[in-house]
Structures are given as C-alpha cells and as structure tokens.
Image 1 (spheres, one colour):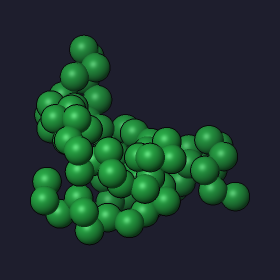
Image 2 (spheres, rainbow, N blue to C red; image 1 turned 90 degrees about the vertical axis):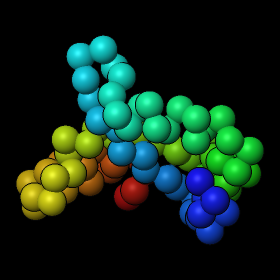
Image 3 (spheres, rainbow, N blue to C red; image 1 turned 60 degrees about the horizontal axis):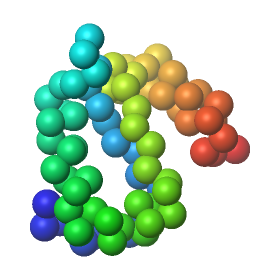
Image 4 (cartoon, helix red, strand yellow; image 1 turned 180 degrees about the vertical axis):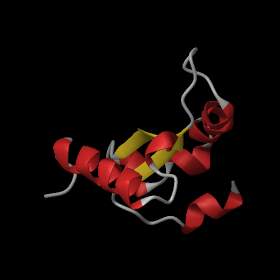
Length: 79
C-alpha cells in the first residue's frame, strides 16, 4: 500500500478475478485499497480514469492480451 505514492499514471487498469458472486480474491484486496487516502490521491483516481478488467483476459497468452487491448480500444481508452 505504501508504494501507491510511486504511481504517477493518467490511467490505471485494475485486474479483478471474476466469480459467480462478483466477489473474488482480487475484489477482497482492492476494496480496502480503494478506501485508502493514498489511493484517492493518485492522479488517475482523481480524474476518474481507473478501469477494472477481467483477470481471465490476461494469462500471458497473445490471444488474451489481444482481447484485453481490444476491450481497451472498444471502450475508447486508446485510439
């Protein structure tokens, strides 16, 4: 959590593990982080530029990495 101050990004992508209930290991971790004053001070957070993505789209495969990037482009985050 202390390393959040080192993040100086315009956009953040947060990997979230999906589950049937919408809760998962990553959701349990990110909840308290998002409540932290350190999190709220991040430029991307202040600008509303934090995006969650399905962790299944990023398992080190070229196909899943491509699917992630296609989602990012489809959402208009990158041109």
